[in-house]
Length: 275
Length: 312
Image 1 (cartoon, rainbow over the protein chains, first blue to last red):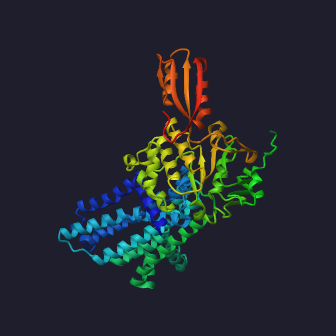
Image 2: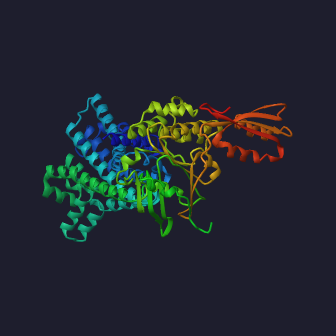
Image 3: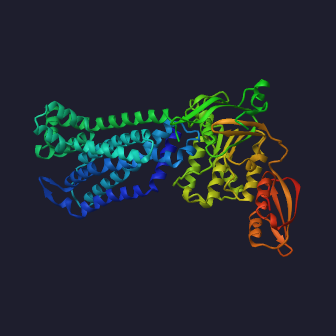
């Protein structure tokens, strides 16, 4: 446990000094400031008002930005350290490989999630101070969904990073993964497949397998399940699972995917040459 | 040497004495994309051996070290006191202090690196700071500074301090003194002298003269094979010094600067220079002087006995 936490601290100390982290923190902080400054909490659109509306917009932005940011920065983690020659020294110290790998992932997770959460918390505090009603249940579930989404892509990123032999290959692979998952989000390819009369089971199966789609469906269900906003596949899933079922699936499935990918990455990392 | 392996009895000495070698490499092979970098390396290293691992670039020195540290998977057998470094990673690496040739490009603060290194190895930050201080690096002054922004010499001193600031009985060092100034080199040799009774050392270098006087055995690698495994006269005190006087035929700025870097002081209008050279550094010092052979009027080197303090 000591080595795990020491490695997590080390990765945090390393990440916080990098340029990507500054940009990343600026993006999420900036988004919230922008949303607040544009008076989003005061507007009423499609029945959503106050912080609820801000949360909806923020979560949609997170869905677009968080996965690609997490993937691109994480895949350079193991592969980049290997190429830079960091492993030769740090892995000559008596740190267990499991503590090293999972500690890196834990540190990266905290670094990735902190700006997202702090931005949300700042928005909630600002709204409460202004006398707006804060939807605490939606806030808590949204936070949990974002944690699961971040963990999922962190796991995928760690797996790619452990397998790829160079940071460039890892970055390319991460981008392809993100693009494929994005294509299979409801409104894009799945909508097209439904229009082409493909079996609904296949469409729904693909939607359920795509962590991006799962996150999107769960976050939409959290606020107001309407076909117009959710997309066809998500609506079928809602019909089959129900609101609670979708929320539970939306929390568990991304964590399972992330953990499985990270475990596969660890197996590859442990088996091969370290530097 | 027509690839013939020139062996003394060193390799089998430990076995003959009924003592298990501390480090054992048995028919170790490592291949990268069908190119062998280690080709059947067999080596026994006994407790107390101080080995210079020499060879040109690409000879396999770094690969051998990485196999020993369990960082590379390889064919054959590698054991450290009977334990496989990869399988018993923690138990093996707790005993090994490693100084790499190229410092890692770490952006973290120095304090964070020291905390990590001592934390995972059960070391003591105060001891690391003490060794660093002896080498001329004030850890308190650089603790918030990013490791990567330290000078080459400061990085090397810190890595040496981390390796020597804990109780390890095996030191693996890759060109450890390459970035150190003569004063720091002398302290470094003195630090090695302090641990030589309890530590086995493997010092890698591409030039034998850099490390010859630190060791009692030389292993040379060429294209992944051991081509020389020989005993070295072990008469030089690691902490010993030589009093030195250099006389020049005329004053010369470049010559004065070079001697100044070795801590020499000039007199007689720059014609006479006095200083102290660390015992194991004498070949390096003579190599420096050879560049100014035309200026030399006289040279005397006199054994000054072992000293712990810095050369002046």
